[in-house]
Length: 395
Image 1 (cartoon, rainbow, N blue to C red):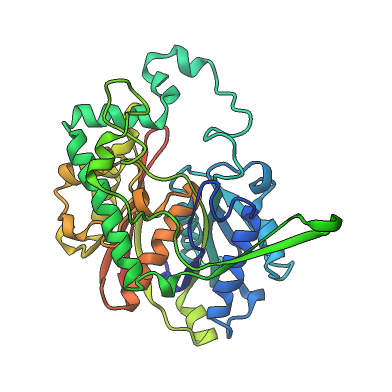
Image 2 (cartoon, rainbow, N blue to C red):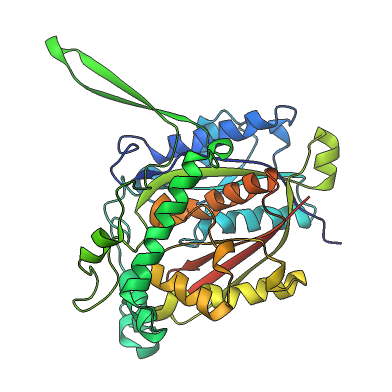
């Protein structure tokens, strides 16, 4: 019999802009910090009881390669007996890790699991990785040629097909910044963020190195100077006559997050209080050239599995890969705009690819602790044409 899966704790690092506050910070150090901070929230939990550590990463190469989940687990001081592995479903990797961990609990293979995500886009030179080698046959078959599309071109295609104007995209982007800034002023993110201290050594006088340290307490992306007039002046970056700009697209970012999951037996053993339970998780495929509409297929799939209606959702985290695809999804699913990304999204807060799903989960759980959300959705579009949807219910 399938068992219930409960969220007990969650945390995340602040999110830094690409080549911003975390430009000298390794991704495995970001993840290790999230793991240590997570376990500190539940000191009564025996780390040796963790069945596995599953971490999402969209570009698992270089500093975040070689099974970054295991490296960070060891750096965090988890027992060597606790295994770990890295999972890649592109932008949904962080939420996929949660689904994978939940599956282990539901099957009775573990009572305590850690899931999370990490991505440093500062250390990765290219979105496609260090040495991409796609199969040439994908370019020969007409039905698969769209895999060669850059993500921006898929957003342009979605904007055209769904008649999403440049003005609407810019207005949505401006709203994302305004909501994120208001959330920061009202300290909405404070409880979910584990403050990170960066360290960087540089040459000093007399041959001595000097150490620069900085405490990073909040996300770097939200812009006080964002204005519609400025957004309107930005040139399209993917198509000459297009409407997708750097201003109405997600920011390339660095960050990490971690979530602690338990079965009912785990709750009893460690006297832990659950925040929420995982109700359903589903992934669906769409044409690769329209990858941004993935949630259109995945969300109804997840709602049906949960026995919920769309009206049951009072908090929706719809990842803002591009304003164009978010608006298309909202239009098609008839989402209430007031319930979508109440604290802003990736256009303002940043999108560290494989970490974003877990970061947005930390945001939802924090909202549930404040009694601002009861039934929540986290949904992502995914490169090569997929969508993921995860449903959580407050306990």
